[in-house]
Length: 291
Image (cartoon, rainbow, N blue to C red; front, top):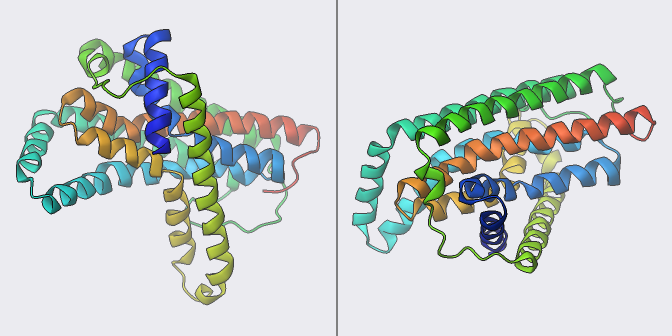
């Protein structure tokens, strides 16, 4: 509910301010606000560089949630309500828009590559390895490189997307705007609810980790499971947008659904770049001391 409230209001507002062609990007960028919030809490509230790992780590969960889990959830829903025609129509649409699907998959994986590289530079190891606490902050050069890597990924995406917009403008202009309402009050209410719900879920996950991590000391896959579940939580809003837009069975709404992976991955890179800039400033004045 909070995702729908925030994204529909954001889409309505941006349609009035910047035009319809920017609605898809704004819808999918709005779902990244929990990652931004969690990162800022980590940087300013805890003084921990690891908060930047939240947007970077969410990119992989965007990929499997939007491209694999969301269609499966929707198909299961249609099976339960005994509506096989929708399943058939989705398959026809996927076959018709095969190139569009491949474009989004490629861009999402490319953004994941940039995010993984930035994560490696920042944290000194791969995303699937649980990082030990209490380490000193990495040097300034690492932060600078992570900023450059993140911004390069954003620029590459925007170049490719601008070409797609020129080739197929209808994908961005003709999305279903039935529920869009240009309301600042609804937008801020939705954002507050969205960030709060993700914050509570992350807190519950942190408690679960504290309670059960000792039971998994000998379980070598625990860090990987910990990473997958943790990054999944902050990507649930993207999944909500994807399922809702897949269900409309049109090419523009399919583009919006797929953008929940590719565009959100790009936005995560932008958020991580911003976080690295903030971390660079904080580390230079001595306020950031730990990973």
